[in-house]
Image (cartoon, rainbow, N blue to C red; front, side):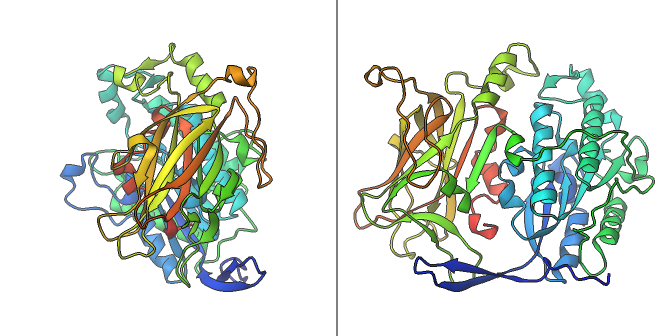
Length: 488
C-alpha cells in the first residue's frame, strides 16, 4: 500500500490536571481486537478434556503479524460464550485505537433469545465499524448438520431455549451476513455441509489448514503493511470458494448505538462519569503509574466519602421477558428459573482490590440503594458481600477488580412522598434520576482501622436472566474482567 493510515501511527495519551496542565501518561498503539469463541481460540474438539493440543488459530497468526507492525492486542475470546458480554462491554473489548477487528460467535449463538444475540452482534459491528472505523471481519462458522441431529434426537426443536438447531444457525448466519453488508464489513462463511474437509473430526471446529486460509484471506485485505483501508470500506461481502457467503438483502441499520439493546449495560472507566449524581470525597482519577495506559477510577482516600450513581434499569427488556416467558419452551426447568420476576434486575459494582504493600491501604466499601430500587447484596464473584459491605484489602499480592453482585427489585413510591418519587438532580449535568427506570445508589468507604481507600472501576446493570450469567468467578476470569486497566 502506498498510502499511510493516519490512525495507525502512535498517539500520545495525556492526563489533564485541574490546573489546565497535562503530563504524558502513555503512548497508545493501534489495536487488533479479536472477539469470538472456541474456534478463534484454536480448539480441536468439543470436549475440552480430549484436547491434546490446540491449533494455531488465525487470531494468533494475525496477532503476531500485526504486533510486528506496532499493534497492541485486545483479547475478547471466550470458548462457549456468545456475544452478549463483549457487546455489553464493547468499549473495553473494542478499545479506542482499534484498527482491525475479527468477530466469530455463530457456533455459540441460538441457544438463548436470538433477537438479543443478534442485537449484540450489531452493537459489536457498529462499535468496530462506525465508532472505531476499523477494518472489520465477520466470520460465520456453520458446523455440520449431524451435530444438531443429536440434539434433535433428545427433544431439541427450533425455538426452544437452551438448545439450537441447524435451521436457527443458518438463519442467524444469514442475518449476520446482511449486517455485514449493511455496515460495509467483510463477511467470511465457513460451512461444514458445503465442505466437510474444512473441519476437524468433531465437525464443529475448523481444521488447521482452514485457520491458515482464513488468516491469508484476512491478511490480504488488511494489507501487507498493516494499514487497513478504513477510509475505503468494502461495499459487499468478500468471498472465497469454498469459504463463501452471499445475501440478497440487508436489514435496516441503526444511527445510534443506544438504540441497539442487549438488556445489559456496562460502564467502565470514563463511562462511569455518565452515571454520577454527586461525589463527596470521591474524585475522578487516572490511577495508572506513569507511562502506563490510563486506568480510570473514582477514588476516595478520606473517610466518610460518598459517591452517588443513577443506574438505568432495562425495564423494556424486562417487560419483554415477562410477556413472553410463559409462552417460551425451555429445555429444562433450570433454564426457566434463570429469570427472577421478583428481583428482575442485577447490578454489579466493580471495585479495585489490592494488597498490603500498596499504600495507602484499601478499606471497606459500602453500597446502598436509596430510591427507585431495593438491592439485595449477594456476593462478589468470589466472596460473600455481607450487609452490602466488602473489604477491598486483598490477602494475596496483586491488584484486580472484583464485582459485587446485587439482586434488584423496583421500589414503589412511599406514602410520605405522596405516591410520586422526587427526582434527584445530578451535580454533573446528567438527567434527573427518577422512577420507573432508574436506581439511585450511594457508595461510601466505611470506617476501618487506618484503611480508607476505595476505588470504583465499573458498574454493570442487566435483566436477571441468562444475560447476566457471566457474573461468576469462572467467566469473569476468562473474560479478563478483573484486570480492567489492560484495555481501559
